[in-house]
Image (cartoon, helix red, strand yellow):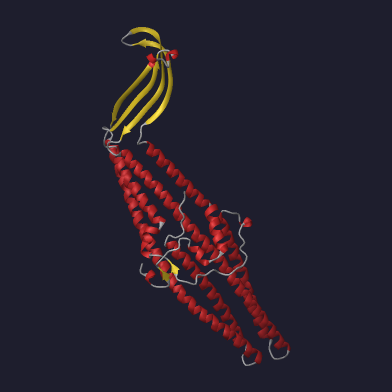
Amino acid sequence: LASAAQGSYDRSKVDRAWWQQFEDPTLNKLVARSLDGNRDLRVAFARLKSARAIRDDVANDVMPVVTSRASSDIGKGQQPGITERRVNSERYDLGLDMAWEVDLFGRIQRQLEASDADQEAAEANLYQLQVTLIAEVVDAYGQLRGAQLREAIARDNLKNQQSSQDVTTQLRDAGVGNELDVVRAEARLAAVEATVPQLQAEQARQRNRIATLLGERPENLSVDLSPSKLPAIAKALPIGDPTQVLRNRPDIRAAERQLAASTARIGVATADLFPRVSLSGFLGFTAGRGSQIGSSAARAWSLGPSITWAAFDLGSVRAQIRSADADAEGALANYEQQVLLALEESENAFSDYDKRQQRLVSLMRQSDASRSAARLASVQYREGTADFLVLLDAERERLAAEDAQAQAEIELYHGIVAIYKALGGGWQPQA
């Protein structure tokens, strides 16, 4: 990946539990809880167990099927070719039936290959859901901490605005200032106050989102999410070899296994062009009276082959082959599309992260300069060398710069999440 060749990355290793690099115990706890309680993850795991059971069932077709049988047949009627009289008849069977399809043309083997691929695709889908879930939990946590950071900045600026309003009121009362400055200060104070409820609403949304991802009710969230700092990683990101992204992403693996399953089913359909050869047999007791079952005279066995062939329905078989071919073509197109999407997502993630780093550096310089300008404007206004509009503009620029820096820090945090999600990081093997 071209974009990964630039920027601050450690290609010598990759950290599968990448979120632990933030060194935030609360975040680690949230991820662990989500992997244990998320409902979507439980659905995916149930599908994997179902695929494993189906595979085991298909594997049994390779071996003979032995079943036990106990039956009786009592009747009365003519015996054609022997007598026209209606006679009583009895038959009792007790023993084992055996049936085995001889896989001469690979039908069962190809069906087993398809089931294996289906199981592996279900497993990869589960891992991909883990990747997505972890990324969503980490991102929602960052959005929450970011909103808390922005609220803290807004409240800090509220104090500055309140101080400015007090100064304008004092100057007006002393006959130095004017009513217009007081009204402007009140308007600015109200504008800053109006941003706080929006940020609190964003925090509530992210808490609710985290609760859903953890499989919990929002009012019963088991993790304390009181205000804290926004996590950051102050080192080169360990991403390993980014060119191996196609091997690491579970969604690519799932698409490839779905293609393999579709290809195997072509073989299953093609095998129906040929006859099926089976062996069937019986071992046990057969008698004309129930009391004779178990005696040496009632011992019986039988063994014989059978051949079935859809000789007069080959048109239907060929139609099924064409259907299987079409399914394989669709699976191939889906695999190719997943590869393209993975490359696009990875390129965008690396490129965006590098640019966001550059943007944050510039905004940090802007914030420092804006704070200095606001302090200088406050001093000059108190001394009477600058009017209130200068102070008002300086404070407005300070709030905008600090809030922009906070948003850039949130975006950089989101960029880290996007990189590891694009690399397919975070999935854990399931037993």
